[in-house]
Image 1 (cartoon, rainbow, N blue to C red):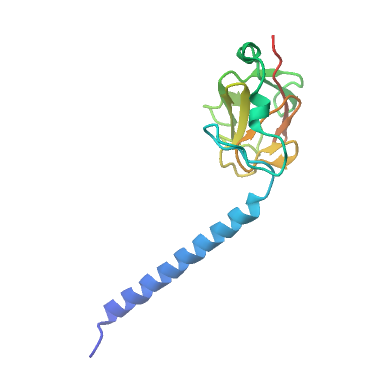
Image 2: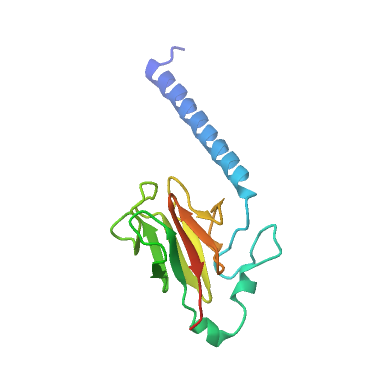
Length: 170
């Protein structure tokens, strides 16, 4: 039986693509496993938080409901190219940080992506999340691996830009 050279080439081509796909999947899994043990992660939708610490997002959100309604989350500029130290940005219901035109908090930092990080308000807690930036987002000098709750005094760093988080109640 003589095999058509085209069918043989297609068979070997399919095997090559299959092996490349399996290599990509295993490499991604290994990367996730290496990154998975860092810090505390937050689960959306009110699920229980996962982490090594005894703290939780629910403990930060607990307390007086009237005080939560008056929560006034802000980012204070410590240092950032094109910004005056001490300048304050209101977070409101949320904000995007980045170099792009659609960012509510615009960064003139060459290490910032156009949509670098997002702040969202979940009840009385503000959540920081990196949006797949090239250089990463740092919370208290630790790389953010997933959504993280912010606490008063936390430092958020994107490239050469550094902010302090405040949630003063009026």
